[in-house]
Length: 139
Image (cartoon, rainbow, N blue to C red):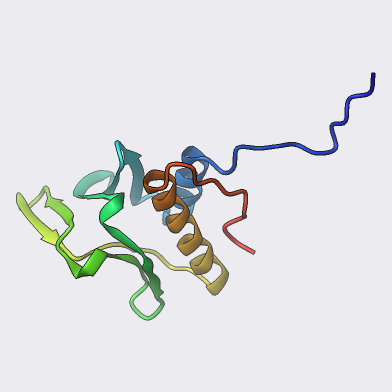
């Protein structure tokens, strides 16, 4: 009996791999995680967390993801420009809602496209029950 191992049937790129890819691109000052259907982004300065953004994935518009190279900001807008991002600023003890989730990062064109693909993938993994993909984020 011969066993054909030429083809492997993978379940796709999972959330852990996606979050790890994203965090690698963000660098050491921002940590992102997905918890119970929400993206939680923690921002650090000199090793101390100064800000936390939290948003339900289903409230993000995966068609409105982009990179502003001039201001070096990667962002995703809320669906319908609603206030969906809960932002806590720890040093000033302020809590506000915002219309987009954003990350300070310097990217080249390939990395920016990869981040867009990774974030879309992340959102779809949460919001679409049967979604899966093996498509690499960067090409």
